[in-house]
Image (cartoon, rainbow, N blue to C red; front, side, top):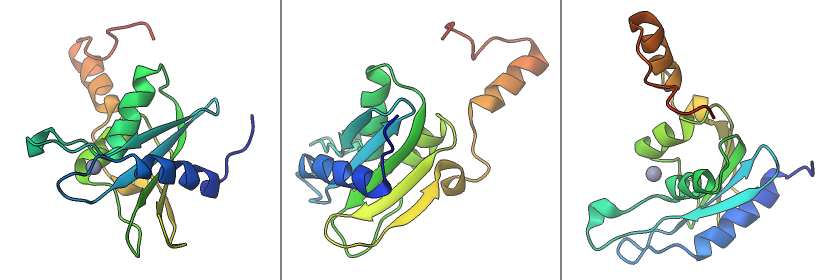
Length: 149
Ligand SMILES: [Zn+2]
């Protein structure tokens, strides 16, 4: 597999950033998620006139990846157009950690400010699929094994 550097993934996130639909806030965000088999999938924030319908770049990237059949991730890069990096919001942290512990590279569009962290570091004590598996084990339920994949 070809190694993808943090900077290469950030560069892809900047492409996604340029496609963001941030009509209301003007706060564009781009994300690029790297799958374990080396595929890079982009996501951007997509706002909506019904504000609650807005989706962040991180979740947009995950939705796209899952839809394309990828569930195992190496890293995600996220960029904003600010002097410093911005961390994923709470909802996105939960969404990201659903798929395990992997690298999170935070960057910007115009500066060299970069912060490398991980999904577990961003959301300590996370509620994950493991909690449901333990629930199943203790209670004899089957909430987590709906499909064989
Ligand atoms: Zn978010």
